[in-house]
Image (cartoon, rainbow, N blue to C red; front, side):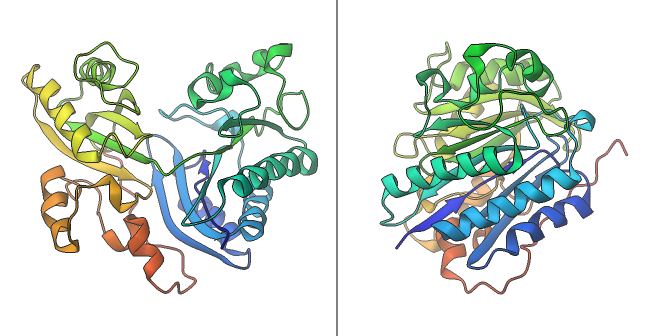
Length: 328
């Protein structure tokens, strides 16, 4: 088996027609199942999750790239999430007994195809990073899209594939291979961004706090459509840290400011190992404890990877809820 998961992050999360268009471009590829579609309004970013055999996944990404070049323009993009391009990041993940080496070579070939066919600057990260300083996405996105033109003028920022040139419409893309991870955000009952940033600095693995969690990346920002500040997290090592660990750590730090939590949010999908579940019946109590249904709808059939894979795909675009921003 060579089952591969792909989780591209696209810099558009507000226009319903464009969101549907990017999903349809992926679904045109034979042999691909689109499991989840998760747009964020303030982030102005959509996370797609699909699976298939290796070459089917490559075909879907090439479709998505072609669609994005025709429909997206980074010169018009604004959002709270760090980004450097229209199709900002393309991670591939080996599922089941799929050989990780196969997925790594698949990703390198994909990066080469994107660079040569579309003439776009492509960086590699994670398990296929060509230089050590590009292993993590943080340094790659430093300066974001707005600083990309200047970076591409420096030889040390030469892309791994594609031209050594700045495309103002598209920006740049990062292709990588990683393990299963979880994007998980905890909402605070305040709109004070400084509090969110302080908590993030205390709990992330590179932080300065005493409650740092292993394999955790965290930042703080404000989400206008939710009306609150948020501690946004990437859980990179699920063997060391679960969603409940993150929720508890944020809760303890928020208590020091006298601030309560306003539930939490999963972005995209998660493996079941991200939660402390001993039986499927536990899911309701965990969802309630973490407040996963307070702002966004949580459905284990479309948000837990194993549950989604166990269902028979019907070819439809997965349902998604687009919040109506309070300021519109």
